[in-house]
Amino acid sequence: MAVVQDHISERPDVLASLIHIGNMFNTQRDFDQLLNTIIKETLKIFSADRASLFLLDEEKNQVWSKIATGLNKGQMIRMDANKGIVGHVIRTGKALNIPDAYSDPRFNPEIDRVTGYETETILCFPLTTFEGKTVGAFQVLNKKGGPFTKEDEQILSVMASQSCVAIENVQAFEETVRKHETLSVENQHLKQQLKGKYAYPTIIGDSKEIQAVKQAISKVSATNSNVLITGESGTGKELIARSIHAMGHRNNKPFIALNCAALPETLLESELFGIEKGVATGVTKRIGFFEQADGGTLFLDEVGEMSLAMQAKLLRTLQEHTFIRVGGSQEVSVDVRVIAATNMDLIKSIHEGLFRDDLYYRLNVFPIHVPALRDRGEDLPILARFILANIVSKMNLPTKVFSESSLVEIRNYKWPGNVRELENMIERAVIMSDNTEVDMKPVVEELLRTNPNDAVDNDGIGQKNPKSSGRQEGKSYYSMDNMDIKAAVQDLEMEMITAALRLTKGNQLKAAETLGVSREGLRKKMQRYVMVAKYEG
Image (cartoon, rainbow, N blue to C red; front, side, top):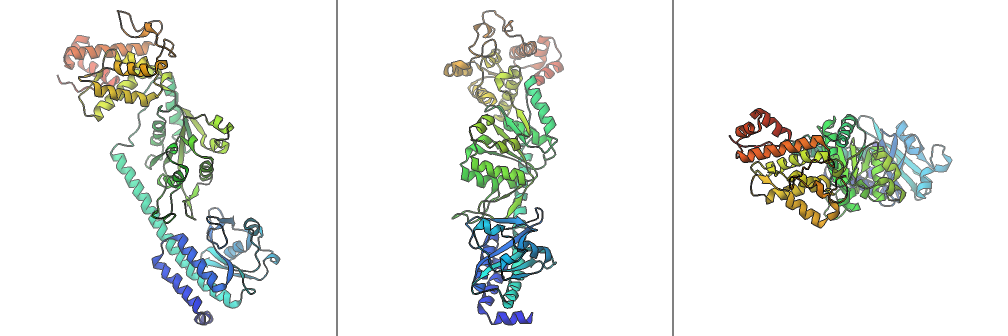
């Protein structure tokens, strides 16, 4: 060691570089900046063409380097840890000084072919921790003026040791920051759970179509498989995704939702994968949705709107379970279940060259199709009542019920905007109502004036049939054209309960006597039809 110290004391440039790297131990917390500085100081000392720091990825048995002179910005070298001079040095833990690269059988010319660079001389030292573990290699190429000397070996040995300590410090700091950010996200998630934001989702309906969806949720929620949810806009695809998450073993971890159509490509990438500090002026480090969802579920809504470039990046992350933050160099590993949703025909998009078929098959491990509201008409009464009860509760209003004709009016419209449109229109009707009754007739009539083709006929499609337009002029709504006996009984019971409550001014005991049922029987029927009334009496 005394010989090395003598050489360093005779080389002020070497001493200055080592002092500079040493000062960075406690001041530099940016990994890329640290590596850049080490490389810059190395080139000054050795007057070499290129210098690279390779780090070992034990999980993939690969070595990687993004920080190397002569590379294009953002270009990364990644290669098999069993190949080449770097691989040999890492495996053996011993340095190599190669005066003629192409005459050495351990040299791997593959990298030269990829980068267009011609390697002549190599000096490579292992990066070894205090515990004796080799975590990478420090390589310098093509010294100007001839081969590397013994003095060069001694100097690089010291620099490798010092650099290894600096890298370990920064990596430990970044890991601490990452864990802090992850805990912060989980803390926010738990707070939202306490507020009920992620309470167990309720899927309302008894139709065979919605029962099939519930069965699919039950089956896939017990797995980690990716899910592709298809269906028209407003059918409740995010609700299905939340249900899968809530019923699965990941339900104690975050559920993160992102609308892919709402962001431009550049912003979508940083939102998904995060961004490193200093990528642009004023940009601070931010972890992306994949990291936020680690251990949990990432819901990608409108995935069909992604650009082909973003689709490629998403595909790689799904395949490798790793990604690199925008402006970063380190790969980040995550364990995330992805649930995607779209209202587009992705097969058609594949044929048109707008969606990658390999990404489609990666996402479409388990498909779930959510039916349109017009295809599950028998669910409309109970769904409408459920929505009404929720809206009234959120607005802190006294209990409200639908007028006698409201459910007929709701059935007379196709609801092209599906559940979302139904919710909005019921909320509008609630705001317009001045008493305990909510009348949907004005709202539906306004919709029909705007969109006359969205009226429902007796077959559930096309124009409204005047014969089925409600209990008008003594004609029964429940005609041969509309034979849904279960729904008819529900509607009739609801109308009779509503009328009895109106007649008795909300006195449930008197209403029960009028209807010829017990008070408890009346309460059960009201609960069944989502009429959780707060009448006194």
